[in-house]
Length: 453
Image (tube, rainbow, N blue to C red; front, side):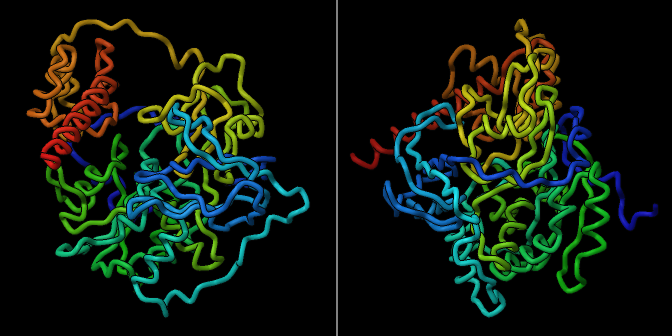
């Protein structure tokens, strides 16, 4: 086939090339998972302040009904993912490993689970401000994993301008295929979501960035994008972490986001393709963010799948639906192998930011002996933001955390590229995560002391 663009793809500097393992699920169509008997809905499943309940224990709630309002501007609304009764509000296990205030809904066995006040919206008659309010009330967050509230990202600060919208369909994490399947199966929702987002932002140009290992999605979107949308599909080289905002902007626009700045500082807004599809779907049905597509995959699961799962479904029920774990399974991650979070127990819920459930066996997860740094600088070649992980690692071992600020540790994305290439098996990204947390805590204390003085 002759392509109207270069399938070798644009890219960024540095990065790594792990095997993608997407063959396990890339050809498996999305399947809706049955509603569980109970869902657990943490009030903290997004960046920012926790949601604030607007219902109480004993209340009957309906699928799609708002049950918690945003707890501030940087927060998100929460909705019932199925019709039933609020049976508990308590501190319950969270995928982060903490106990978090959560709401438990017990399913009504007699309910057809139809959508609460299902309706279409004549969005073209609404103002950008009204559309932004709808998105906020819909509880939308970035579905690529960060779960940053979408209405905040689309609220351009005074004095700034959004000229470019980049729809992120990269999905560079190995194993994950949920975005890929949505680009094949929900193209009308994606296009409508792009139109709505364009009206909110009034952008000049729109780009859809897709890694070139998704040729079918590239072809389908390129053929179906309406001419009036001023939107272009950009094939990108298969390289990790191509889907990170800084890398994506560099690859698509050849623009660099300065240290400590955000995409909007160079007039760019980036939205995950799943989030965009959800916004489009809301205009047709009124459905808020109450379910998401999750890739359940890895050598440790008996039946890999791409599932549409109600938010709050317990992990153990998802695993059972996929045929259960193999006897050799040793670790389960929420997300992919590079940035995913290991799970300590099986009763944690699927959340808004759960892009994948990765089940790894003893062959994939094993203890490695750490050796001294040999200063090979492979980590320097791999780092996508041009840091010196070798130097930062040495400072972290000596606990010179404040000195690490001089070498831009806060620019670290925790992508794990440095740890992946290190021949000495040094857990660099884990040490950087600790250093960043301690530095931010120290900076916050210093700012509070200055303010009170």
